[in-house]
Length: 344
Image 1 (tube, rainbow, N blue to C red):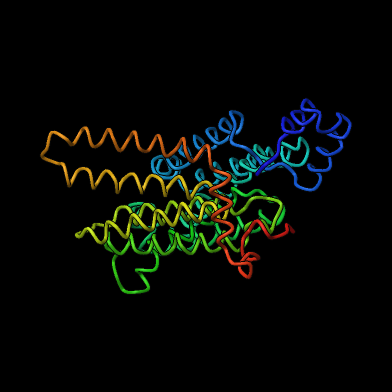
Image 2 (cartoon, rainbow, N blue to C red; image 1 turned 180 degrees about the vertical axis):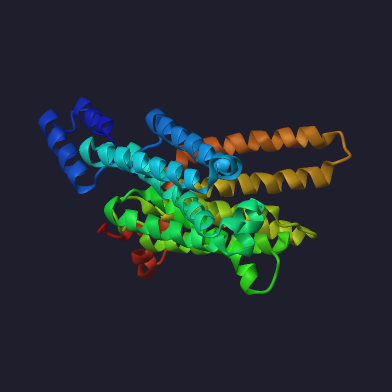
């Protein structure tokens, strides 16, 4: 449970503590556990602006590099990287605007592939006449660009402890597994089914890494790893074709497990994906059982109503339900829960 200043103000209004005590408690709470960034309107504006810049850089890399030339592309990339780094330093260190500064440092990291690609064009001008994607694959440019991005992001993290900086690292590691590993296995590329399987296991690995670092640092590095890991695992699991009701039921049970994990790890991302998966399974049952009957829309409406009722009941008894789940964890396993750890 996260506390806010409004909670302390409420306690004062209820006569539970004095106003001066509330002030001292809030200051002590802030010192013990600095507030982690929340996704409010301001942060939405920050991330939206960063996303637009990323899209612009992707367009620059794939469409305009032929008109700029290798030297021009390198110059533009370095100028962008310098601007992002300078503004990031100003906002992060001088203005203490951590989200804005951290996103700008992330944008600087994202310029790394563009810089490396321009350098390759300068030293290997024959690549300028090749198709962009083919040039990357046939000359291992994607490997060097990916490793370079991971290196720059890792060094940046040593000085700027901004959790979103793990995003380019996570993407690059996934890209290495999907695009580069087939080269070492002597394959042109993975099939769609193999890509799904690799993304699924990579998502599980990322969730494991997130679990190992959860609550061990003041910055919530685990959040983005949980998000990307769960996204990779759940999407791959959902897209896998199922030929039997047993497989559909296994899918349902895995999503139920995700809901339970959300309570144990205190991470809402699991309950979001788990709930969606459960609804998909219920919709599948309704469609298969009542596909050609008049009762199908009635059944679907009933499931929707049931979901709403379940949400209301969970809202009402959420704390009790979570306490029951946590109480079911053996005492010997309690130290494994992230909530029992101490931050470094």
